[in-house]
Image (cartoon, rainbow, N blue to C red; front, top):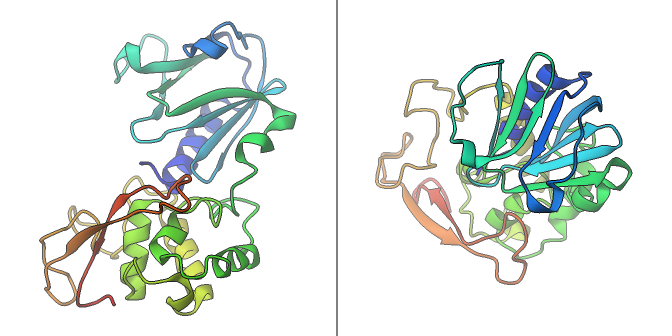
Length: 264
């Protein structure tokens, strides 16, 4: 699933392509909104909120979430699409470009004044203007004995982290994702590390968590089950961590990766 840095870059690309432009075409291929035509409206802004993307057009906000397979792509007139046409959920045209949202996990339109109805539950965005480490600290303290690996994924606590960052941050802290949040050590340190790692990667096409940009060397543990830890050579393991009590966004039973020697 794309994480906050991916959505941040998607918003930047869409903003560069469409910001301030007037739509010359609009095709929304979601039954509930299929009759909505935003042709003639101006794209006022495009922003990310955690893993959510908000495009403000006229007095409406186009709210999308990429989920597992979604992507926004920009095309010039006559350029061949790189994804199948049947995956297109929304097509927005200007005089110069076409933006297509493919396989979007969520696509809905809301009045911009009601935008908070769909994203207001999110905690402070690690890459957003609403970032407030103090609020995140209070949110994390309130998690009690909930596993730190679940706390990091809970978008209500802080918005933007996904499974890659969860595994990598826990490794860098030397803590298993299953350790209770209230026993995970200095929470301010967790918050600072979370923000530093995602900010460092927000403009990179590929995340680099190890400091080594070589292919296959960018991550400490994520996706490396069975391979030797770069620090101690112990084989990396994987596990699953679910949250039956709070099964909200980001808290599904999802795989994590760890080093059994470097983390405890």
